[in-house]
Image (cartoon, rainbow, N blue to C red; front, side, top):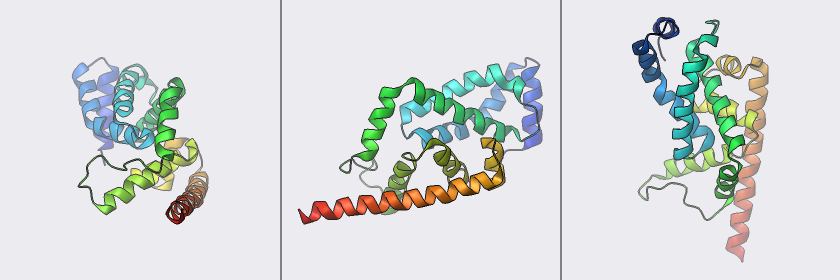
Length: 191
């Protein structure tokens, strides 16, 4: 976890026009920005584009961070919004991602030597990307980023109970998606 006091100092420096402070802030959080974008969109090129977009947005919007929540919590919200904006602006890429996620013949990982656990994890995240955005975002923050329900609620600007409900609902839907996929696989074997 990043040091909040150091983030606060770097934000103050960046707001004051200190480019080195801004660069240090971006450097501290760049990997998290990319990781979150990657998990939400499932496409490396899109995640890279979103990460760059967030860095540009950060330069314009850093003054809006009030300091009430940790900087990283505020930044999660910026990343989530950037992902949503990117997906709305690029509908054709979203359709391609949805087609890929729905294709039972797709390779789940590019590395042929990946372990079964990695295969299962990739399959799980492909299912997570099929969830409604609010459910997907809650799952990504709690399970993908390890935030508590309270921290995720702060990032998502909702109540902690809402995050808990979204996680529960996501689990139900993921279970149904898995059962549906297994049934389709069984039918394919029977034929």
